[in-house]
Amino acid sequence: MFRAWQNRTMSAAVGRAPLPDGMGGADPDRGDMVARLLFVGDIHLGRRPSRLPADLDFYALLPSDLTPEAAFRSLVDHAIAGGVDAVVLAGDVVDGLDDRFEAYAHLKAGVVRLIDAGVPLFAVAGNHDVEALPRLAAQIEGFRLIGEGGVWEALPFRSVGGETLCSLGWSI
Image 1 (cartoon, rainbow, N blue to C red):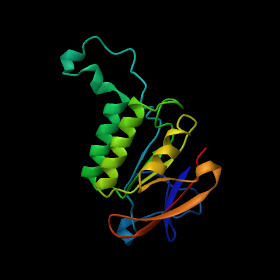
Image 2 (image 1 turned 120 degrees about the horizontal axis):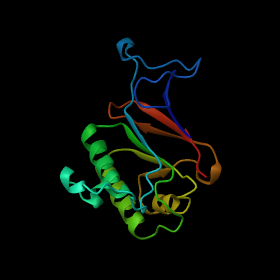
Image 3 (image 1 turned 60 degrees about the vertical axis):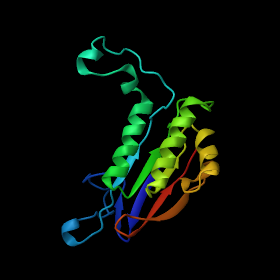
């Protein structure tokens, strides 16, 4: 679970989705802060696509263009180019508990690119990555696993605009 807030403003989703009753909401026309958060979950790095159409060449696509790894690289490119305030990896980033080789290398490369670009990066571990995400958080300074071991945790961070935001969540 992940939530970000500043003062009376909370956003649990990107865009203008309505917030639960009593939670208020950001209104840039009132001068409220609006955070640009990129949430992604269930990437399942390491999984191979199946049931690909036979006419990929018609679309100038290769099977490797449709992998979770290609989608993750695209996500990282978008986050860096788009000036997001933070990226949140919302569980099941790798496909299996033992994804120590190919999937882990792709995950680590993307995380390093985001951190090197100054993009705050948070994650909550899902049931597929209870080993990979804690290991990565221990290896890479700046990559934060929220609520390791199932303990609720609040972590402050700065938006691109300089406002202080706070993440709240827990990991499996």
